[in-house]
Amino acid sequence: MTEETTPRIPTELQPRPRDVGYDLAAALDAVVSLRARVPEDAFTASVLGTERAGHGVLINDSGLIATIGYLVTEADDIWIVTNRGQAVPGHLVGYDYESGFGLVQALGRLDCAPLELGDPRAPEVGDDLVLAGHGGAAQSIKVQLAARRAFAGYWEYVLDEALLTAPPHPNWGGAALLGADGRLLGIGSLYIDQITPVIPDLDGNLSVPVDLLTPIMDDLLRYGRTMKPARPWLGMFVTETEDGFVVAGMYNDAPADDAGLAAGDLVREVGGVQPGDLVEFFRSMWSIGEAGCRVPLLVEREGKLLDIDVASVDRRDFWKRPELH
Image (cartoon, rainbow, N blue to C red; front, side):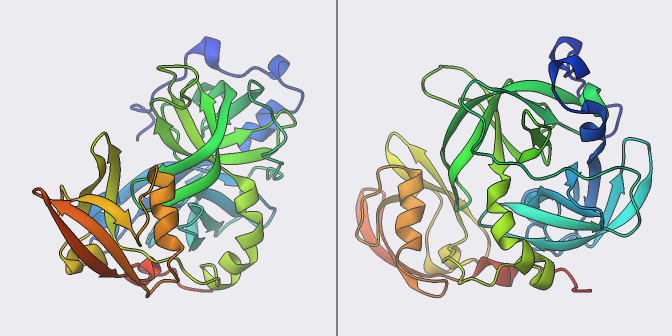
């Protein structure tokens, strides 16, 4: 988004220094703008586009920026802009698809101080927080922690305990979720139209908690990826409906496509298990083995049951990798 088209936070929802117990201006200055360009032949280009924009958060004095990975995956050109208008190029350090975190290295000294990582388990539901975007208070919003819960995304993604806040930030990608002490609790990832069943029609944002970043930081810095065994990936999009788990689409030439799955298929069983929800669906798939294992699916198509075995892969093998420096 350009500055002219970026939605402005209503004044009454913007955080004010008297609302918090830390240096609000300094904390908001650590949130930067990220703009990334991805090659047209990149694997994610057809789904995520080749021009991406959002936020990132400076997390150390060397210029390391944490963001949400879909902004920078496969990017070969990244620019960083601070609240003071300073612009420097950036380099994609790494991306972890399991958590969703991406790391970018600024290739120049930034005119702002980093944020410390906080404890995402510290705030209780109902506590006041701030979800901050690049642009200071005008692009930040006072929120409450509405829920902590497991979350499954249709793109073969699960968080054991996501942070859900309300009201929603209109430009959430890579935004900084700040705790009561001004430390970074999470990185904004998604808009959710019903974040908790306890309160109907309450929409908000999902942030990925930073305690998932700490244990993988060294691997991302050294290798651009985590070195633990990869989960099996099928390359399909699955949605949960009243009828069951529906294959909504697939990546071209991904394992699901190669195995003959089709959009509209109902998946009745995964490895002999009837999942109760989408979280269990993907966990059942991952429990079969590491990437490379065969994942047996029982599929209903036009009233007929079909046994389809899908030869899984490591999804990272499909991506353009960042060059290591």
